[in-house]
Image (cartoon, rainbow, N blue to C red; front, top):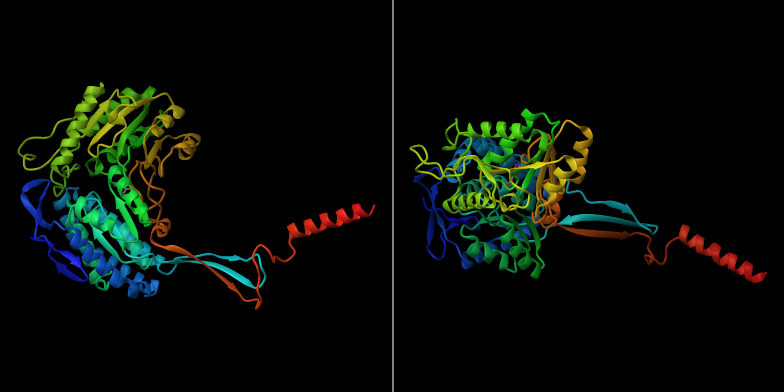
Length: 514
Ligand code: UN1
């Protein structure tokens, strides 16, 4: 199947006529799609369509815009199963997780549909009489949204839903490894009544289609989820053009397990956080920091449980680990396993690509655990993006928090403890955008802010009402109904400060009279 770009409400072949192929990562005999290798011209046409649709969309009342999102959410409920299967086939995640991914998009559509009747501003008193002060959100302009393959419908929804409810138009450039889910999502918005040109889709590689979108002066908002390396370059380019720019990047997320924790609960959390989505989440728990006293028995149980997880096709209901997304990524994981061994960590489980009848047609890697590692090793510092967990030992709460924070990244963190004080200390001191108590590092919900500190983000948030700041400008409104010129800071009615100075002046003259 040859996919097409979606520009101005119509399918469009890439100008180059070139396509590349995407195969099922669980079975290389299945061609998923031929994807347009779009370039500069295609990106330019899509931005032109978004720009042309912008005036009418921005002047559509926000509650009307929101109704389209709501209808899209309803349609997505009906289509959930079909779209989840497409997702598993194209990027590998197991079917229950693919359903969760579609559900996250449904949740986001409904949440942002509600925002259409809020988009709250502020009213606040004026320092002057007969004057009113307010703020309101206004749209920014066409947006370029660049999304990854690991949450191929949820993350486009995190960006598109707030972008649209705020009155902006968009060009979406989805990841090469998961084109169907993005298209399915945009198709649902179109079927819900989104006017042509409000959302456009350009397929292609980041370095070509993506870079052309970022460089386009007509684009006023950039939102990117992906690696810190690429995000940094995008941020620099967007800054030169003074675009709004939201960057969601890597993580090296830690779960702390204290000796007083419910160890069975902590085990389940480490397995789900470390190996869910085959470790291919930016919030994956790739470090587990275990209190010294329980280290040996916890590691033993973790290894035993991880060994029982089955890798295979995500469509098979007995499977917990789907394939690795592509060969390049598999190679990267293998390289990190070699690095870990070289650094002197102990490879306690896994570590080599799976071979055998069930696995030979796909890209499968088993749950992999390094123990006896130290916090500064590369396997404890760098994002691997695969089913590789590094277990570190700590002396207690303070030490655990220090180790967790010793990272360039700060996306999510978790602490398992039954101690109320330790839990609150963790919440206060773990330096991350998201902190969990007695739950793993994954599992964010759409109505709360999502994002990280330091190398994980650039100070903005996705999700929740917080993300509206990426997709709108504040406009400040002053209405003076006094009928005369009132000068701020100068014509203030006698307030405490002024009375104070009058008093001082009075005292001065009295003194002078003495
Ligand atoms: C990601 O980690 O790449 O919090 C996104 C979660 C999901 C989203 C994760 N709701 O795990």
